[in-house]
Amino acid sequence: MSSPRRQEALLVLADGEVFEGESFGAPGVGTGEVVFNTVLTGYQEVITDPSYAGQIITFTASHIGNYGVTGLDDEARHPACRGVVVRDLARRRSNWRAEGDLDDLLARAGIPGITGVDTRRLTRHLRQAGAVPGALGVADEATLLAAARAEPGTERIDLVATVTCDAPYVVGEGPRRVVAYDYGIKATMLRHLGRLATVEVVPASTVAEEVLAREPDGVFLSNGPGDPAAVAGAHEAIAGLLGRVPVFGICLGHQLLAGALGGQTYKLGFGHHGGNHPVRRLATGAVEITSQNHNYAVADGTLEGADVTHVNLNDGVVEGIACRDVPAFSVQYHPEAGPGPHDARYLFAEFEALMDRGA
Image 1: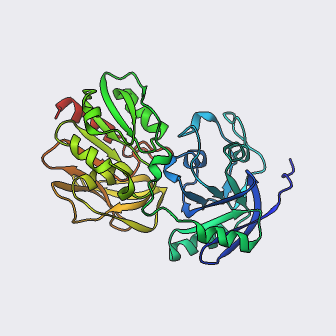
Image 2 (image 1 turned 90 degrees about the vertical axis):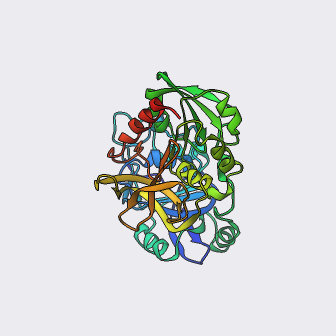
Image 3 (image 1 turned 120 degrees about the vertical axis):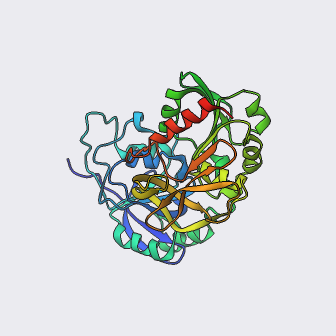
């Protein structure tokens, strides 16, 4: 099968760096904060993860799209990322599960992509410069540079408001009752929770009193995009739940729990995006290989009433906390592993045990 004829395209960063390639996916120009992800498989789950709202995803793996896409692997109904950058887009899919090509997925979602990019050079640049705004598409360099420099990035912007659900809905048939805050929740998380409980997913703006009125056995704080300090009302809502119901947070939910406890967050240089980050579980000394996707982190030493439970062995980032006096804990990484290793799935069992003990 010969590859489709593609138009020449550019990726231009706000600092003036230019990368050549060819367009795929949707036509037009995509702008966003450019980050890189080191997973070798799971590109569909990455692209459909709402945590990538406001960002352009660069895949460091050299061949992307070789096993196609299927709706069964979507993490959300609609991708929220702004663009996709790859080295080599596969010419054909090879997977009995495939229902279409990656090119088709992006075209339907209105997301532009660029292939043929020197992603090694791009990744090395992002490691030095940090996650910087960029623009990609079939346009001249000057147009793309202006678009990149006009892109505001993710700091102090409530991106959660762009991906949260409009109204509550219920999933799962487990024996307990869980209320899950949708800050950009992934389908794989809901599948895990649905085995433990009947889960009512609520919008990010839901106040604590409305959650407690549902009389849940536990509250889940989901992943999501962007700056935790910009999520309107989240810290106040979580603070109103602590000590009254068991709480479990993942990724952005971890950062928001820390904020409700008085902790501070900060932006990492180029974030953690990949499926192979080593994390030490301090209680046992065991090392877990983890899936991660975040640009912000909890500042060590700023927490009140909680202990650090997990630490990233690459850079020392706080990867988990547990409250001392109330039943609440969280992790920065993704134990549901969509995609990624399954080393940390025991955390869902810990949430189950916490709910059974009660507040």
